[in-house]
Image (cartoon, rainbow, N blue to C red):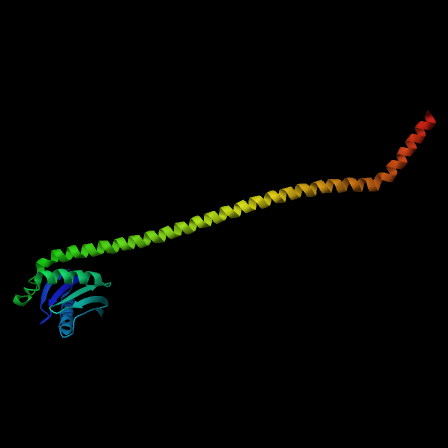
Length: 198
């Protein structure tokens, strides 16, 4: 990440934080020169396949050359830099005269990054919480399904026992229907033989 602050009247670089090639620094200076003619605004542009978040105010042009948008960072930098250097900006005669602001800019950048990381951590925590909640709901549904399967299997077992009992009764009835005549005839013959013998 590269942060450069320019004086708006002549695109003189006042502060630079970070490293970049001279080609990128030249492109950013040309960009700042173009922006010095525009009204105050905050936007995003693309230079060398990198995003450039910039803010143009009445006295300064703030440029952040990074792979992602940094609008919150640029607003905080503008507040602090304007507060410290608004009265001194017209007296500057050489480039990067306000490089002592690098420490404050680095501090602001760390604060924004930690806030961003906390927000990302919070988002990830919410996602994990949602996944855990979905998993718990699935486990509860499975438990409910298992309970239903258990009650169904108990009912099936009871039904099977009843069918088995009915089958035994039917088997006995079939036995009596098939052999009742022979048993009665055999019983009569036995009684008749007992009577004859006695």
